[in-house]
Length: 358
Image (cartoon, rainbow, N blue to C red; front, side, top):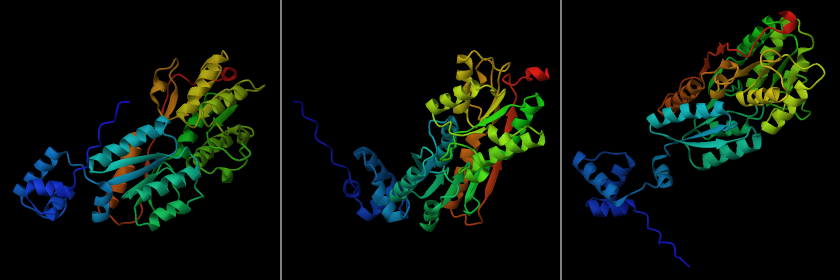
């Protein structure tokens, strides 16, 4: 049986100090980036550290300096291109400021979110960026504040928490997209979201646990009510969570006796499944079904037809929230800031006049 090679022992600060001919305290100051030493000594210690392949013990350093050099990030669904782009923006800023990012995925599950935050605090992260799954279950977020770490919220505001927040104007964006569909003569409209309730049925805004979705539904309903679209609340469909459930819901919608002639999808993953099911059922987009989605995912511009989108500047959301958090870590102690990033309705070929209106 082939034996594994022996594990090479870690090089310690004491090893570097001995090889460089300096005290352990001096080597620790150079390797930890604190205190004052001469340029000559610093260069010598760093050269020896590189030659010995010294790797810092991050936990020990954090206990000494009170800083880990890491930011914790908790997002709802890393498979969703929205969050992938936002995390890229966060890491770009964090890296430039000298921080690493530890990423956790909640799957929009509040228990998983709590566990992730507990783990990240255990790893002594310096601050956290969170996309909260629930706007009313926030004790664990208050715990972050009580720990003394700065907290920033991405995409979803919680007014009860006085923390830095970056969002888009979800209500206005949904209202503008819905108005566009109504202006094209559509009266059977449906808004589809992954958000859900225990009964899997929309009854009231108060039942919606995710604040950004609540604002989007508000915008959808407002545009429908202004145009006197009948019973718009019945047109809010919940539970499009994952490919299988979204496909099932899309089949149910598009095979119904009075299928919608236009759909507003709450994210690009939902829109993609609706697009595929429509094709599978032999429906034409936009002749039989007009489609708009939140988020300008890569696929939306290359399909036939390309899909009309609400373009959220997602990378900018990520960079902005990271900049706010880094400023806190660098000593800013002013009042909480709420940055609202504008969206843009990008009109493509997936919206057409309803046939009866043509």
